[in-house]
Amino acid sequence: MIKIFGKDYITVAERLKLANGDLLSVNTEVLFQEPVVVKATIVIKNANREKVFTGISAANPTKMIEKSSPYEVAETSAVGRALGFAGYGIVDGIATADEMTKSGISQETVRELKNGKCIKCNAPAGKPHASGCVE
Image (spheres, rainbow, N blue to C red):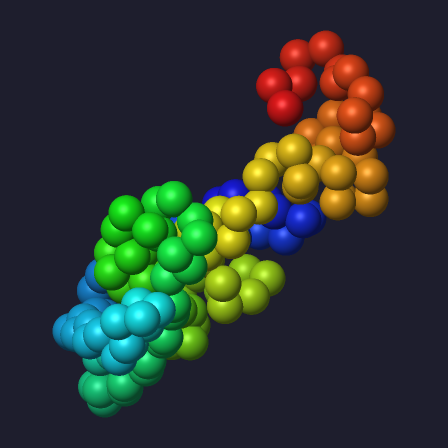
């Protein structure tokens, strides 16, 4: 679990682990290529019934990782969102830690926006951190 802006987020990998025994299938398809938009459809076995959930994600070509691997990034996010809609790994919202990270939020930004203080040691933004704080 990763804390961002005071909220907890789970990675797509963790959501996949949570769904492992219930996950019957994962299918992804590219909806658009400019920009890259991917739709994920998952089928979950729940109480002897199959339930279908979808998630959609777009790659942002202005971000380096998304520019070099737009299909992979959008696909991972779409799968994570579909799993979230199915109820896996929901803590404080549908977004995954992967999505929050790809949004370009740096730890410096997190420190400055979390009430103007470091989320680990509570030091004011731009000031030295407490002894032992690695932020």
